[in-house]
Image (cartoon, rainbow, N blue to C red):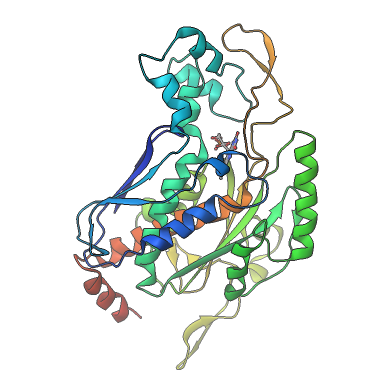
Amino acid sequence: MKLTTAGESHGKALVAIIEGLPAHLKIDKEAIDRALALRQSGFGRGGRQKIECDKVEILTGVRNRETLGSPVTLCIYNKDFAHWADCMSAEECDETRMAEKCLTKVRPGHADLTGIRKFDQTDARNILERASARETAIRVAAGEVYRQYLSVFGVEIGGYVKEVCGVKDGGRYAFNDLLRAKSTSLGMLDLEVEKQAIEKVSQLKKEGDTAGGVVEIRVKGLKSGFGNVMTYAEKLDAQLAQGLMSIQAVKGVEVGAGFAVCETSGKAVHDEIFYSEEKDFYRISNRAGGIEGGMSNGEEIVLRVAMKPIPTLMNGLQTVDYSTKEKAVAASERSDVCAIFALEVIAEAVVAEVLANAVAKRLGGDTIQEMQERYNRLP
Ligand SMILES: Cc1cc2nc3c(=O)[nH]c(=O)nc-3n(C[C@H](O)[C@H](O)[C@H](O)COP(=O)(O)O)c2cc1C
């Protein structure tokens, strides 16, 4: 399957085309809208979320709430387009106004400076419009389609926020506990820890500063053998890391025990294998995080994703004005202070995309029923 996204942050719309979905997959539009609403939630978000109220429009590939096997096009219209339209229409575009709207006090940690130079621009808005995490709205919409596809095979994805700017939740949770995270303020499961995290974010906001954090994503119900040990590019952990690292502000991905595997010996790291007629092959630990040799091993897939603090600071960092080359304070405008709740929702969507592709690659099929039969025959 292939996913293409297009659209600027303040452009008319965001669009996704998914090619390769089988026919007869039931599509629940309301569930896509619920995922979009979740992406807009969470303590610490900025003013943009009050303007937008994201709803998906399905433009192609679906009839009577089922896929046809043709490309599926999803679309989300931007309400904030009016803002940007000023700069776009030839009649209204006067040079003084354009200059006022120019972003030249390039922000450290954002794509502004490198993007301006690479694309020979003078206004970083021509870069940030695409660099912006607004793009993730359409990836969440597509991710929800992939989630609906995976649910046919009994695969479920959940997650929660584990850390916000150094405030950590050290708890261990059963998969079913993860559902609760979507109804808390910051997506955390330990409400005492979340209270401290909210205080931390509020304090940072007062100081004109920002926060990042860590989310944990878990996948239940995927049988063994998805991903491919034979081809490096098809290794499941490699593809998950690539997908997750493509999310704005993500700076690290851990699988299973992650970096902690380096702190101890093989005996304490690898998951011993057992067999019983009733359970087939099984493990009593899951430090591998459900992936061995680039293939799912049938255990829960466990991933942690690290997000850096938001780069737009109200109390801007030192920079250089690109147009004058003079020392300046970096641009600061409407922005999130902490978007870790949204990151969790986006990371689930990206994981759904990667896993759906791994399933499609192994099972093939023109109809979802054909694929389901093949999946059911797997050990
Ligand atoms: C959900 C989400 C919301 C974000 N909101 C903002 C924001 O309001 N302001 C900002 O400067 N960066 C925000 N970012 C981060 C930037 O988009 C990102 O840091 C920037 O595009 C540079 O990319 P990089 O951090 O991957 O290098 C957000 C990221 C995510 C995932």
